[in-house]
Amino acid sequence: MKKAIAFALAVLHCLFLLVSCGQTEPATETDAAGTQGTQPPTEATEPAETEAPVEEPDLPDVTFDGAEFLFYQWDIERWRIWNDLAVEEENAEPINDAVFRRNLKISEKYDVTIRAQTDAYDVYQDNVRKSVYADDPLYDVCISMGHNIAHMYQNDLFYDLYDIPYLDFSRPWWDGNSIESFTMRGYLPFAVSDLVILDKAASACVYFNKRLAEDLQLGDLYGLVKNGTWTMDTLREMGLAAYVDLNGNGAYDEMDRYGILCGDDPVIFFFHAAGGRVLSKDEDGYPALSFKTDRNFEAILYYLEKIMYDEKLTFNTMYDNWTEDYVPMFMRDQGLFLIGLLRNSNVMREMDSDFGILPIPKYDASQETYSSSASVFGGNLISVPKTSDRLEMTGVLLEALSAESRYTVIPAFYETVLKRKIARDEESSAMLDVIIANRVYDLGDFLSLNDFSDRFLRITGSVRKNNVGGGYTDRTSDIASFYAKYENSLDAELEKLEKIIDRWND
Image: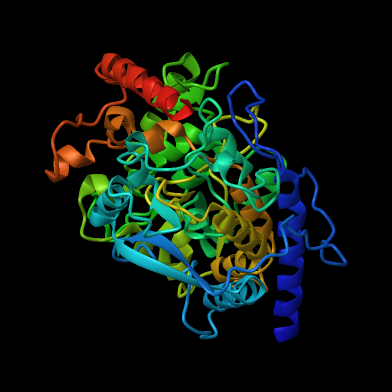
């Protein structure tokens, strides 16, 4: 068994390197739906016999006389499930030990001490602001939650990353999709690299219960992804076959078995998977509203009415306000599919039944690619605060750490996500490649104009029903009327954003 696991890990690492090497240039929107990324191969690829060569960053031979290099990052209880910036010692956990070895290697090579300071989410952004306004160089690099950025970008807190020496965004350890999305008229305030993994953990995916899939005779789900026919119609058809009223009370409740278990998140996930974006870019590089299209409205109507609001198919724990969470329900075989984030796998390692991992399905088979949302609730963004006064060291270490992470921390992340399943399910590793390579960074989510993305996310009515805030609609699938209520305010917010971008570039 140990030999089988070791061999599988080697194959996994090779697959990741081979697939990811194709991401050396920023992704562009190439199909009619506006989707990005790389389509999975139509046929299974033979395992590589040797590992892909390690690509080294182009950096000067310098040292920094024992300087301390400090990251500043956020946290919320239960969100920071892995420490991906700095750890004290090895403890036999794959990610922890990979981070330790990465930092040790870079620290010794450049004669620095790498540290990370963590504060609560609700004080993090204020501390960054205060530091910059006071011209106090407390931190070298900020690692911001995606949802933080909406409250920070307009304050002109960060350097343009294109101005940081030695950062080469054409190299494979930088996420080309994030570079393309977050570059606004030539200005890049934040980006994603292999340095951190919590952004990868916040990638949308579909888990399926292998035992239930076999009992329902659903066939090869991985094959559907490979041949491009894993669609929302397929998800719905398979899911409807899974419902069972386990307690026999004639009501749809948390004691039954469903086709789909989820929260509100699929409202956004399905939107992106269908090719939709709240904000895209115009020919001059300015963000432009792109939500209001016939195709977007058609896709939203379909997945709300046919998937999200079908109580026999989908158990949405956020809307129904049950005390039961959908992840434990899935672990008890009460769902065929679970739509969530890759980070959910950390809990589901203890699940008795085997599970597999799939990308979010396409809206229809005509789309060229699968698209998986990078959630703002956890997606970590790299920025350099304007108080940083050691830009050469910052550039060297960010590039060196990101490059080294590609060959140490990223394989450890794959191993952790697939732990206990890897010897029996190498196919899921290929699915991870598809998910990671095709993540969507919707500027509309990250910049959150007038909180529109949050309002859209709660179109199920969960916020109103659970009495946790005002200003949101009741459950509706009349997306045209929903958007019309916010269209004028979005136009006004977009004008303000354009002025902010012009100020950055001045």
